[in-house]
Amino acid sequence: MLALVSKGDAGLEAAMVADTAHARQLIESAGGNVTIQTLAAELNTPVLSVETAVPLLPTHIAKPWGQEIWYTGMEVRGVSHVGDELHSVPLPWLLSLMPEAFCNGKPEQLTLLKILDPLPDEVYGDLYFEMHERKQEVYVVTHVNKQAWPDGRGGIRFGFNQRVRAKYASDDEFKAAYLETVKRYESVRRRIDECLDGIRLQQGVGLNDPVEPARIDAWLAQVPDLLVVQEAELRAQMDSFSNLMPLQVGDVVRVPCMTPHSLLHGVRTVEFQTPVYERKILSFAQKVLTQQWWDTEEALQGANLDVEAAQLSAAVEVVPGLTQQEIVDFDDFRVWRLRARASVELSLAGAQSYQLLMAVSGKVRVAQQDLACEQAALLPANGASGCCLFMESGAVALLAAPIKG
Image (tube, rainbow, N blue to C red):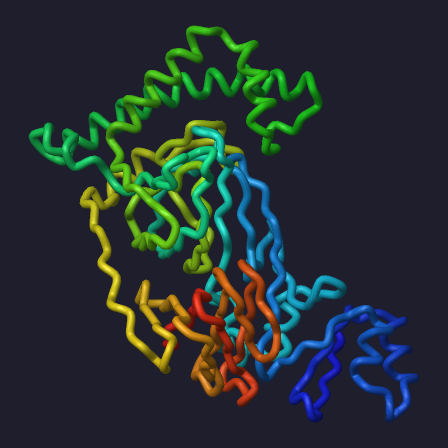
């Protein structure tokens, strides 16, 4: 990677490009009066304002239950970019250019910002019932599909059903009963998946490729009716062990470690999480495409059986017309929800660590850059005075910052 850095009236700006012979020749042959904007245009790369705010571009990752939209993801499955609609560069380039400013010198610990966008279809749009040992997450509900949930109230499977738990003499008996129920379901699930895999091969569809619900429904018509009936009955028995928590737009869900959970179909959320890929799958009502096994027995050994309903702190007015509500305070990052009751400005300059900003609704602008709904920006540590947030009355935004260790 080659980087051009310029300090001018607009502050510190940077442009990055792949290290090629053409790029080197173009840069070396440029005259001393050529601006960074001119060079960047010739190199087809964006100019980034690295003292104030850098736009994060969404990367779409297909899932069997819908899609994830990454803003700070960096792994084999996909890499997020920064820039604009015309030109962009990989996020890791920016982090390598200015690591202290944009990731506290630890790119692998950059808080992961993404959107969970499940399909509206029942069952097909339900996420894995899974648990994390190190990864902490917080969800903010931004949309509930009216096709899936006409009354605007969706849900999440969160922990275990306390009424069912109370029917057993001990937690060990409860776990054993749940495990047996899951195993019965998994046996039927795998038999169905074997039938569907045969159809995949006949039609030239990859065994681990996500497939749209309508196509799966057509395939299921070729599966023995008895298996389809058994699957539905056993799934209902299995799901009865989990706790169903209703969700509507604006709700917040904190997911601490060791808590099994599964966001339901048609419930779209913004998610901030610890940037580690680890999970234990307790169950899934489709074929798991990323691994050949379920982790139910191992997960139950450490799973938290209690359902802890997190209480949000009260919103406080940080400047006249703008309230700030802390929605999570994990040991590795914090997130606040900002609500404008009037058109208002807030300085985000001079922060000790980088910050992540996402517009949720209304008109939001940071460092003279407009952020539409679900657009996000990465703000550097010790940002310049131009790092100012503007929100019109009624606008909502989310702001996250790491806990600097």
